[in-house]
Image (tube, rainbow, N blue to C red; front, side, top):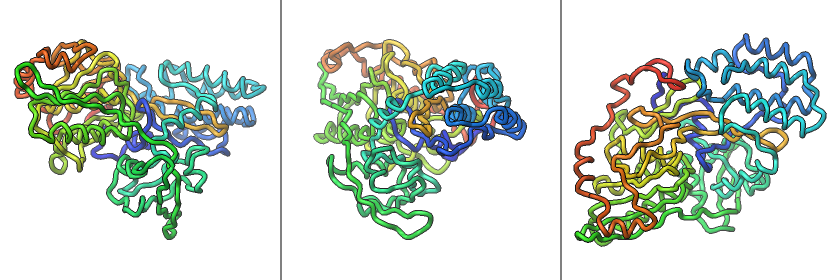
Length: 474
């Protein structure tokens, strides 16, 4: 099944709406009072789970264990099933392991202390056979707050065009101290309406001030009148972009940009770099260096794409990426931008085997839409999956793989990487290599001219289902 627009199930919607490092998203966990014997899914499975829960009362240790097992069953994307991810969900069987059996075994197991509980959680997660799904103890999970790029500890999500606080503020954050709550409606940020903003744009507004300054939020709670909240900005976001103008030995002017990671400053950094490089007139080519860039904020890849591509009209807007969730449903993420700057200057993206995640989403999007070529010595890393970081009731958490990406031409990223168009390694001094003519820009122009963009998926059905991917056609 394929979804048009951004209305995918909870995990994917939040994955696209929140920003955190390594394409990881902070998702709300279960309430602290959630019963360990709660239902995992459909009626048949619920009966099994309830019968198993009756054998052992859900004490504090089994409650935490139950939270983990339910989160896996609610969100885990099983890429090990040859029949497809939806088959795993339907049968509640992951990596060949029946999850009700895991639950029944662990419900009967005495858990003498929290250390034993954590040990059993790790053992259960290991059965999933997923390198990215793992348990995180409270101390480690607290360190994930360093990925709070809002500076105020808030997860912002968009629902029907309105910005909300999507989960309880991070523990110890200024958002929590100010009294903000999950599901608060954010009406204004520093006096400016949030209407029509994406979560990423709202986060940029939160950051529009120096470290230690106050940001004033107008918040409506439970449908009531707006009330002000003054919140201190605790962190600032480093500009991940550096740039320089290079003149080749043939006199060609090349704007070189290096982006070391994707954070909430990526779009602003690239936009400023393009503006600075082009301030004295047109340049011949742009080079975006993503070598060694491990990824980061997923929405940052979407925003940077918008600097170099026009969004098109209505349903024919350019596809940036497909997101496949644990139901096997696809969501088409389309380009929507207010910040297009340069849609014509030839663009070359430098990558290597360490370019991963959001780097691959950006490169795949620009490459498939015929806006850029990839120059690299090999395919990129091949991390095409999204993780959710779910807090548990005792302050620990689990990191769970919840979705995967496909490029606009419907090709896999995970385990494959983005292929290169030009085999090239510019070494440790790329600007000098560019000056010396190591990159053949004439070949770049010819390859871009010959590129064929993807067909509009809303008009043409895509090919049949793939391993671990979509189930059927739209």
